[in-house]
Length: 91
Image 1 (tube, helix red, strand yellow):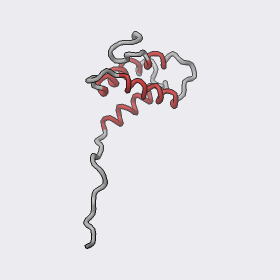
Image 2 (cartoon, rainbow, N blue to C red; image 1 turned 30 degrees about the vertical axis):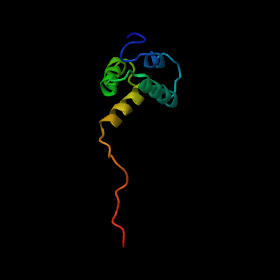
Image 3 (cartoon, rainbow, N blue to C red; image 1 turned 60 degrees about the vertical axis):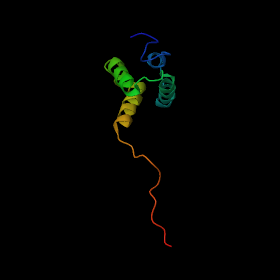
Image 4 (cartoon, rainbow, N blue to C red; image 1 turned 90 degrees about the vertical axis):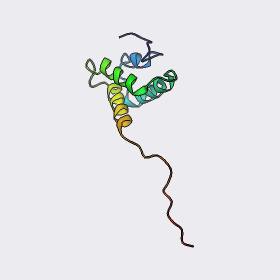
């Protein structure tokens, strides 16, 4: 594991695992910063999956592991696109 690579350009995820007593809320903030700092064209799902593979085995109960797993779960769920469905109006 090294700080600052293609998967974690700023080393944010790496550092989050080294902060004693870090909370889930702090991990969510760090996770958002990580997601926003990925280079253009980087597949965020594959990067996140690789980071889970990298860290989860050694720290399964760490808040960042939980946040990253939630992120993967959210990415895999299909989302409805578009706005509200319009209903025919009475004329």
